[in-house]
Length: 447
Ligand SMILES: NC(=O)c1ccc[n+]([C@@H]2O[C@H](COP(=O)([O-])OP(=O)(O)OC[C@H]3O[C@@H](n4cnc5c(N)ncnc54)[C@H](O)[C@@H]3O)[C@@H](O)[C@H]2O)c1
Ligand SMILES: O=c1ccn([C@@H]2O[C@H](COP(=O)(O)OP(=O)(O)O[C@H]3O[C@H](CO)[C@@H](O)[C@H](O)[C@H]3O)[C@@H](O)[C@H]2O)c(=O)[nH]1
Image 1: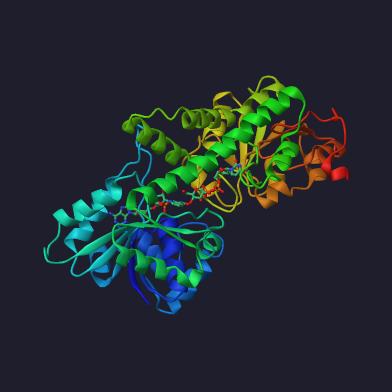
Image 2 (image 1 turned 30 degrees about the vertical axis):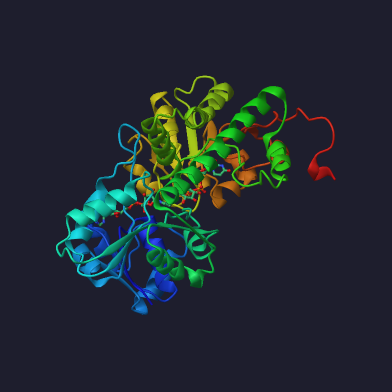
């Protein structure tokens, strides 16, 4: 059993702190946001993440999980201090390090005995050393020692608990073998494969992994755009490509591109790190440009299907950047919905979970509805931005009946072209052959 302070109760702090408690450690999750801590103490979880509320309740009841806004006290009570604060994108694209620096100073001021300071936030190479220096400079007791470890987080929102409990690997970077072993042992109950390395490489692994996954997405989206032009079908292409074990089938889902709290900011941050190092990371910059353009595709497709958008009634289905989260950070809807409003469309929106968060971020003119059916009523077209189960499984007979014109622009390729055609719906998806234009030869599904 380790006594661990987790600083920052965002996605990463809350989920990883709770999972560490679940395997028997004593965790104090702390945050400067007193309102958040008060909510957590009352049993209210500030983020939507399937299964998290129940797991928090279980571990609070077992007295393995505590919440406090007294960050200093939490640091003093712990043997291991996890930094899990935000590293958002600054105006110039690099990671804003002000929260990490503030936490490092706080740790220095409250370092009352040997501690291992572990960085879980996604940070530029050199941050481990920066954190070490800040702690060193603010130490109250000069005789007290500490070690710094990098242990980046790889969880995905929406499946965060399962990801934490069944990590592909834990990356542990440190200059101290002793500290690295303690953090490796901490992961033993998860049965996680451990990869130990130096601090700098650990920090780079996180950015490289996210940039690579983003590259896969922009690559398949570029292929999708070519497929549309030459008469191929990207779902067939990605299925065929993915069968090659060197490529793999994951992250080859074409659509309107990536959003969320990580890929957009981390690709910008890595491009910036490369620039600073004197290397022009052209490939990654093209990935970012491809993604920025991809989200606008649905507007082109709508314009193509309806002509003028002014005065048209458009249903937007899904606002979060992906299903099973209420996170709106860099969601494609934040670009697409304001543009629809600017073009004079009357926008009716639905998201089963993220609508509350979306209200303050989208134009006031947007109307919000509680179901797919209410949202699409009398609409001239509907646009799918997030593949929530209730959207990907919507009743197509009702769609056909309730809409003024049964036009669906699907940014997530949720439906088969044939099914939509059978329901009399004019269906426009990403990277697929127009309905009615059969490809030659046999399809996998026909074998
Ligand atoms: N969200 C994800 O899915 C995810 C996954 C892997 C890695 N990451 C990385 O993990 C880090 C955290 O991400 P997040 O989404 O959980 O962040 P977040 O912004 O949602 O939450 C960070 C929390 O830290 C708190 N905080 C800020 N300064 C503080 C301080 N001085 N003392 C105590 N608390 C403080 C904030 O109040 C906030 O509650 C980022 O670097 C991110 O890139 C995020
Ligand atoms: O084939 C795909 C896969 C994903 N996406 C989009 O990519 C974005 C990110 O999806 P996902 O990776 O599932 O969600 P995140 O929660 O942002 O997780 C990513 O970012 C985290 C923060 O760094 C990392 O920890 C995770 O490993 C990494 O997958 C979403 O907008 C998805 O719609 C696609 O367009 N096509």
